[in-house]
Length: 238
Ligand code: C5P
Image 1: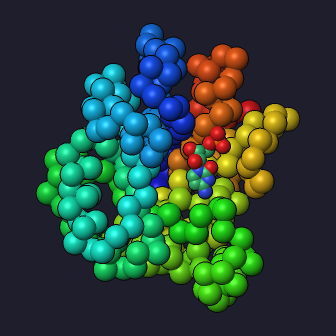
Image 2 (image 1 turned 30 degrees about the vertical axis):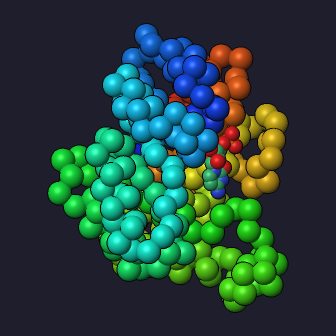
């Protein structure tokens, strides 16, 4: 059973100055948040942003969702790994061979990052899956199947909704991480997240890592909001 848990803060900022304005708030805080760098920041600032944030003592989930032929993904993973990220991801839709190649790309690294698969994007509805992408079956079946493929390929886990974490652990076993966005504090504004839970509930549902963006980055006191996430999710105190 993987009982390790952490809160990952999504750095959804357009540039380095906005990002460090946020990161600086944790300068004297003893626990440096695990942070997520996505396409927007990485494409605007380049690989150096990863090294700079890493140098400030943060663990990094580099959320670039690779999806290409196996050989290309293997090389891409090797390059990303050299930046020192702690977690990387790819699209399970690329197939088992592509995922195996990604694992090979990380082999031999000093600090091998966790490799996580995206199953179905939450923007894909049941209707789009069946009638636009012509993938038959229910979204749940497709997600479980992609998660099984990821496990077969040797990946460490999947990104999913906290509401799916239990089903995934049931189908794949506990020795597989679930990384779950869609987190809101009870009583707060949901924004554009349609299916969400609070950090305490995400813990109960079996998530290993919660990804939290705006509830922390847009909070009046981001350090306090982060602290609340850690209390609820990591310590189980509400
Ligand atoms: O601000 P909020 O907490 O909604 O941010 C959630 C983060 O998780 C964002 O970076 C978003 O892109 C990411 N994410 C998500 N849903 C997914 C996959 C990733 O919200 N299915």
